[in-house]
Image (cartoon, rainbow, N blue to C red):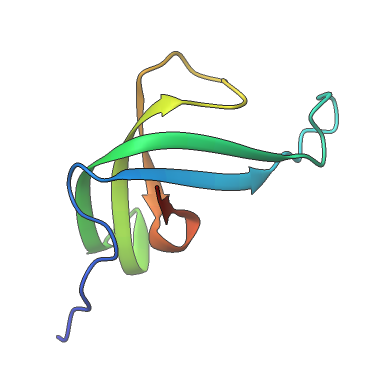
Amino acid sequence: MDVPQPKFWFGQHVKCEYECDDTLSADYGMILCDYGLVIGLGYDIPGYYCGGWTYWVDWYYLTYPTVKLPHTGLALEDELTLI
């Protein structure tokens, strides 16, 4: 199997921009941005995501906090941007 190089690596700061789709929120339709640190990565992980790199990100700032920080979550490569 030919595995492509990951776009991000351990210790890199990344951001995830997304549009708020919560119709009850005052932020509905706005572009929100979360910031975190890459702490892990995997390729074609069964049960999580198949088809590329998946990253574990330790989020330290959430624009729309729905969980207590710090929070570790999964993100796909195309959802992240290096900062």
